[in-house]
Image (cartoon, helix red, strand yellow):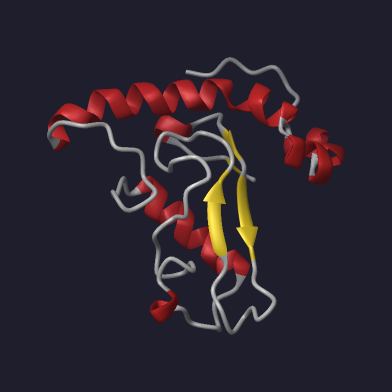
Length: 139
């Protein structure tokens, strides 16, 4: 789960899924988003050199923590790649639609994650520490 981001993502909670193959770290993990964030398409492979989308670029020295940092860095730089949400039109036309979508996704993310089966299974016991169960007014 990723949270604590600024800008369009402020107040949002985002759940992703890493699947490490049995041969990890020799082979790259599969990375997907399980909740909407306005940048990556749900349940689509994310195209990054640190994922199995590009096995030729994989470096076995990369850790899951480093992959997460790379994912978030790519995410907040507003880059388009395979697995990204496409808003249509020119780059300038996309900005208002992206901002509106991301702010909406951030606003509704708490309720969606609290009901998500993976959150319930893996992280619900940490809800208080994470702060996801607090009522917060988002921008």
